[in-house]
Length: 270
Image 1 (cartoon, rainbow, N blue to C red):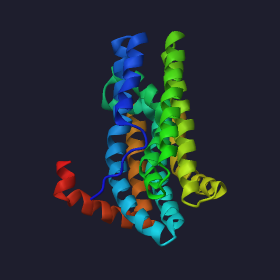
Image 2 (cartoon, rainbow, N blue to C red):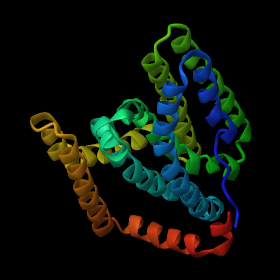
Image 3 (cartoon, helix red, strand yellow):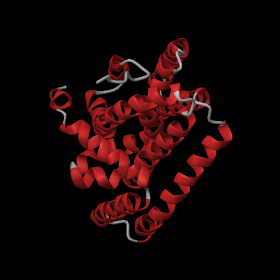
């Protein structure tokens, strides 16, 4: 079984910690590290498994000249998996962190809120990056890697020199959003999907997710109790997952394929 490689080297994920350590206290760096771990650990696990499924489908579809159909389906599913939880984190990240990890870790929740929208495109880009291998556009991957590293380094450096950790993380998030967002549209373009169709898919998913989140927003504004917000977020998430599973056959098919991967002893040992 072929494992899809991520677009950007894994080692670079640690460099923000090194740069932040040069300008800010270990406590602040610890907050950032926890926020990033909460974002990346589950998404890396799920994204890696989806990348395996997509690569197998994509190679076959490319030779059958219908790659755009497969990519459009995967793109929509990736959005449905990532947009909803990241919007929940954007709305109630601080509340979730103080309830789950304790009040002293609320700062990490604020950092996670700043990084939440970036995380959507970071998550999507990993499976979609296999399109570069399928279509033999590896030079584009190198260009995007250089762009990613340089923009993020500058972002953290500016925030660090100015002594503002929120500015550093905000610039870090914005630059990552720009690069990964741009990369996603490049991948989709290589697969034969027009930009307007990509935006249409994104708009539909964001709109549907927002509708589910209206009760949480109301609770956040009117009640403001972190425990109630956390419980409400959990209930709404369960309802959303059940709804997607019941109404989206493509999502159900993907779940069944992922189950086969997770049952594979080679994948478990990996």
